[in-house]
Amino acid sequence: MASMDSPSFKLILGSSSSSRKQILSDMGYEFSIMTADIDEKQIRRENPEELVMALAEAKADAITAKLQIDVFREKDEPTLLITADQVVVHGGKIREKPSSIKEAREFIQGYSEGHAATVGSVLVTNLKTCTRKGGWDKAEVYFHKIPDDVIEGLVNEGDVLHVAGGLLVEHPLTSPFVEAMVGTLDSVMGLPRALTESLIQEALSSSS
Image (tube, rainbow, N blue to C red; front, side, top):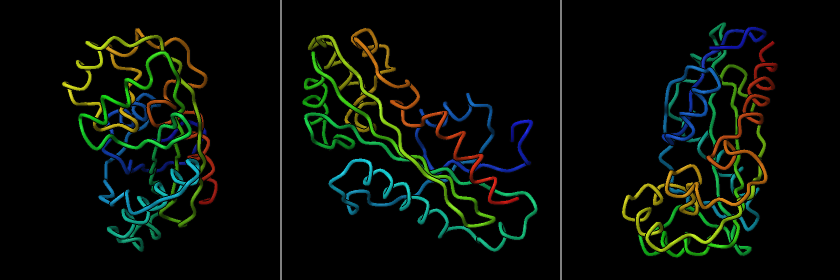
């Protein structure tokens, strides 16, 4: 689906993230889903912005390798592939998805009465023209004291194991303890709306 002033196009979201699916749906888009199935640990960068961009690129490479690109090049209607990645930065260290319940618990305990930053990338690949438009966005979250029973509730439920830094600010258990946020909630959730919309329009302009 396209907005009123945009050419008609199709969208593929290269992510199984429920948050990203929800945000893209809320933006008014219809899309199909494909996953990259890459070993993210094989891609390392010291700089968080460079890391998330490299991972979004790798996901796009993996998905496009599964597709018959010639088919997309011949179509009148462009197809855009959106890939994204996110890390949490806490205490100067990059945090990805927790590797264990123990690590998830330690991550969340570290946010209590402290703060964390999210750094997320978005990459839009125009499969008709093979051009890519990408960027990153950053947000910060400040927390009140998070009680131990809340932390245990989050860890036992398990969703925190599947997100960068074990950080789920939108979760009903977590949200009461968010003191302040610098940036947007959709950015913290892994798909900044304004950046995504801008990149979609840039990628579409390469078709005209």
